[in-house]
Image 1 (tube, rainbow, N blue to C red):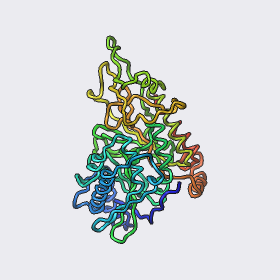
Image 2: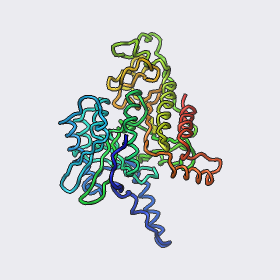
Image 3: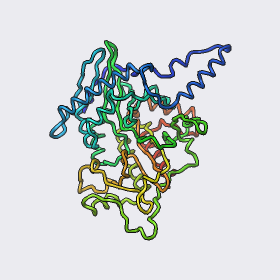
Image 4: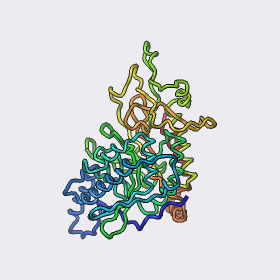
Length: 425
């Protein structure tokens, strides 16, 4: 199915660092050092208040998204999904700008399947509180925002990336239906914003993998390679929010082996839904690590079929607190009804389900004996076309003997799965 053809692209807003790139003379060295320090100290989250340079843009996004979500509240999709659900483009005209909603009914259905109430979605993204700007260590020229509660992540996208996402959307939805515990980031909306008679700027909305963020101590963006995969860590005790990369993770592992119950408490068991035997079959893949390796295989195989590469495994961890444990030092579990998905009797093994931690972001959370890990696959819009093939050839010559991100989709998927296997226990 062909995706709708978006209009011309520009970034939603200038890069936050654009004003810091002007050349300077030797006599301005002190000023340059000051600006570099300012850039470093700005990394992290910043409230976009009335004096912020992006306040006008984000205010329009909030007003537009409130109205767009109201459409799905007033007219929720009914019946079976149709091709029109994936191709619909709704443009709403506001004072001074237009907001487009692409494939609105399809995304409304997806949000409902995740148990996300439209009213909650509207309240988080609407004008109720200021967005947060995230200044990333990524080389991408995209702008990054979080809703005021940090539950939803907004990112500007190039026109070609939007077209890829929409073209793959039916298969993406099908994959999530078949694998409701997938590690793929949950894409919740694709929109365009046009100010006055200007060009359209595109952005997507996702569930944040790093939610709730209050107790997270470290964050990583993993691609399974070496070139350009190091970030200078923040000084100890610094409040900066940095997303580190592969080389920063060297010597570390994720420990997913849950400690057994204490003597005398073996009778305690996780709370299971009706149909306990069926629930246990969902979890028959074994420990958390076994589940994770299998789900990585399923999700990366799907991305390989789409010829997608350059995606990342986002990962964060926090120390488990007392209120995140149950009797006998066993994690409290539940089965989330919103992600049970369809029953496929002929393919029960492909479901790869698990007992989910009893938390607000259960799909992207794995608990070990001491840490809670947040995991999700993001950036799913880069296709291995001619440009990437040429980039692969150039990097092969430029970085002999080193691993880099631009490789074939099959090699990319295999390498990332191998990285997870090597860094978990």
